Amino acid sequence: MGAAVNGQRPSLFEMLARLPPRVWLQAALGVIGFAVLAVLGFAVIAGFVAVALVIILLYRLRSWVARLFGRRPASGPPAHTEDVRPDERKVTDVTYEIVDRTDDRRP
Image (cartoon, rainbow, N blue to C red; front, top):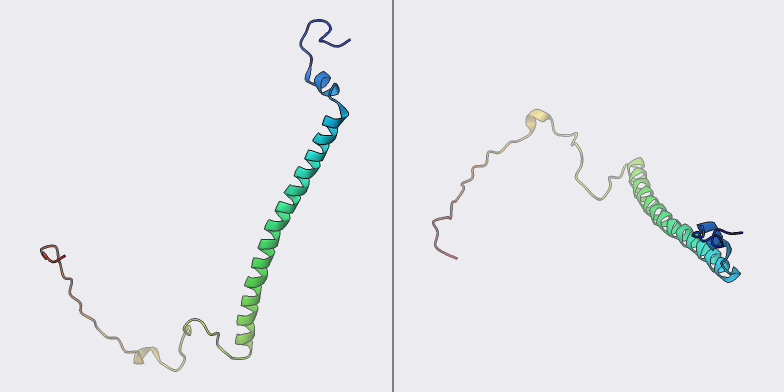
């Protein structure tokens, strides 16, 4: 006999055992649906990461092929110019003046 017959509170397992088959079927379908959605969610995230990695790798491959055939990539300045010696570089002094406009009454 169950615990409810003796005047005690029924246990969780006894309450679950009394549920109709329709509730068990709905619960099983809900768990399966949740698992499918979780797997699809992870697949979508993994797909975005894979597409981003392919784009980055293609960009790096294009740069590598351009350097392989002696062409410089279109973006960015050259890292170092070989034809200018360090002692021939020109340095220009620049003077500047800081103007304090706190006393200026113009808007």
